Length: 179
Ligand code: AMP
Picture 1 (cartoon, rainbow, N blue to C red):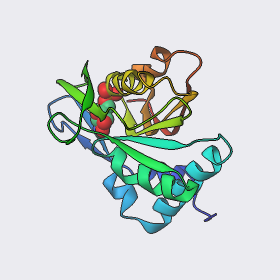
Picture 2 (cartoon, protein in one colour; picture 1 turned 45 degrees about the vertical axis):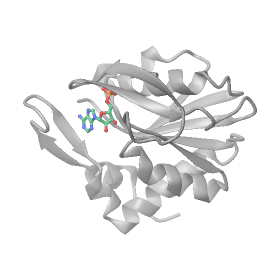
Picture 3 (cartoon, rainbow, N blue to C red; picture 1 turned 90 degrees about the vertical axis):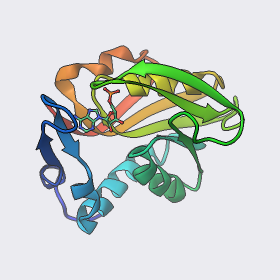
């Protein structure tokens, strides 16, 4: 464990006003990732939280879920599965559409990506309205895994996305912002 603090981790995230559209306070995690002490601290926190949960797969949401997702999967000794935008995955897929904090979109997962015996962690960089993560949960639920966990590095608490998840899903976010 490094001696970095939760406050320093939070401060490492850059706020970019009005990106990609007016009114959005964009939480830029690239400034966290480029700092080696922050990257290690975050990796340690995720590993400590999830090491005894019996996870068998991490599902990462394109594209910022593709950074810590594989880092954590490799550390836990389990597999990584990507959820991608339409037209990117080459084999047969399941698809879900959803509304976002800005715009609408669809996401896909390979039909052979998971199985009933899996214990799955779905990971993304940020939980805003929750639309993306709920759609990702619906994709994962198609496989009827034993249990689903949900994680984002950042949670925008005022949007109350946490209340959208069914109570049997354990939601853990590392850094909270009001907006
Ligand atoms: P949502 O579906 O509203 O929860 O939005 C979550 C997705 O959109 C994540 O994949 C984020 O990367 C991105 N996103 C939405 N709002 C923001 C924001 N304020 N700052 C950074 N990323 C965001």
